[in-house]
Image (tube, rainbow, N blue to C red):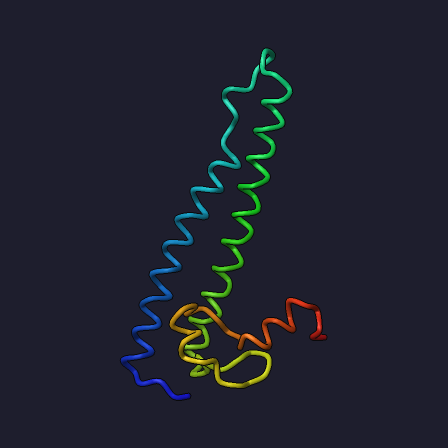
Length: 122
């Protein structure tokens, strides 16, 4: 699939916008995880500490997912520069336009991504 320059520019602008959004979200989550817990003190109940730890764990998971999406966005932007945007990294098949419109940072077809997630690719 060959994209026109205007189409690629549109995808690139959308990817850059998503990158800004995810970077901002990641910074906010990182600050939550690393900020000192000012409320912690001798009188705090153990259950409260557990709740705080759980919240911190959730924030770390969110950060991890955000980092993964940012890596995918960077890969998609690199593929635009390489001239291979819209081509699956695994199978070299064209990624359907509907998939790219929904997930502009997709670098694999649904079939390839499914195989990767199931551990069927070496």
